[in-house]
Structures are given as structure tokens and as C-alpha cells.
Amino acid sequence: MIETIYKEKYVDNELLDEIKIFYSKVGDALSGGPVVDTTEHSTIYGKDGCADRPLRLEFKKNPIHKLIGKLKADMGDFHIHEGSIRYLYYPFGPHSDVRTSEHLLESRKRYRDGYTFLIPLQWKDGCTPGTAFFDSPPKEDQQLMIERPDVIPQTKNPNYSKNFGIKQLIPWKNPGDLVGWMNYQYHSSMIGGDWVYNDSEWCKEFISIETFRFKE
Ligand SMILES: [Fe+2]
Image (cartoon, rainbow, N blue to C red; front, side, top):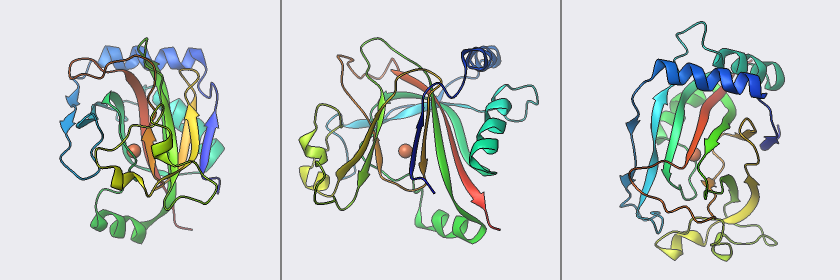
């Protein structure tokens, strides 16, 4: 299986507009939002996180079903275990998306690893969006994350950063691009530009769909 995927304009403008119009009509309030990160891997921003809107898969006419159908046709069938429309307020440092050890054990009983799919819908002027992937421990020939504070959100504790080598940088080029990665790889938001992260305005809006593949 390919570990990371990037396809420009995977979602055409027509479907992208349908999806945006659908979610603005449903008009769900954003839930969650940025939280203070007190863990040892906190970024220098001291906060991280997104607000979310539900995917609303229960609506048969939701145009996101067309996108999910296309993903299944291209990548093989999958089970969606988590998904939302996400609004990023503060960038995420390197993390793996593993919820808990218990969740990992349970999902392994029922499923095989699958992909997380991320499709940007829009971003604000001044924000330079992207997703970075890491190897931990770093490979010998890799740049370390501490060598790229221009694009990788750095951690408050530099000791935590030592374990991450930059595997791949994927700047988002267009709304509708597809970023995909096999579960549990370390990844982070990319930073850059002159956007000032704050509590009141999100900088990036994207579809997030986390999947597992079915056991044979
Ligand atoms: Fe993540």
C-alpha cells in the first residue's frame, strides 16, 4: 500500500461547490475549538485544535456521498470510523491520530489499517496550508523537524522534536486536492505565511475522513 497520497484537484469544482453549499444550508454550529495543550508535545503556540461540523452522512442527498463513492472506487472499500468538516485554529504538531491504546486494540480486532483522507475546502489569505509527514526515529539522511521551523510547528520542549525526521512535505495547492495517508503515520499541520493564529478565526476548512479497511 502507498503510504501517502497527494492528488491535485481530486474533487472537481462542481462537486466542491455542491459540498460547500450543502454544509452551509445544513448550517450546523461548530463544536469544539482550540484547547490549551498542557502535554509535553505542546507546540510553541500553547494551543491546538479544530472546531468541527458533522458530516451528515444520514442525508442521502448529501453530495459528500459522491466523493466517498469516488474514494472507494479508487482506493478500495472502507469503513469510516471518524469524519467531520474541520476548522483549524492552531496548527497541530507531530501526532499519530491513535485515540487510545484500547481503541487501537479494538479496531485491530475488526479492521485492517486504512487511509485518512483530507480534502481542503478553503483557507484564509495569509495562511499557507499543508500537511507534513514524519519518520520516527528519523532516517539518517532526513532533515529533522527542528531544522524547518519555517514550515513545521515547533514543540515547546525541543527534546520531543528530536525523534522526528521529515518524510514528506505536502503543501496544499488547490481546494479539492486529496491528501491521504495510511493510518497512524506521524503528521502535522504545515505553517508559513503571515497568518496570526487566534481563538476567534479559523484559517483552514477541510473534510476529514478516517477509515479502516475490512478484513478479508
Ligand atoms: Fe491528525
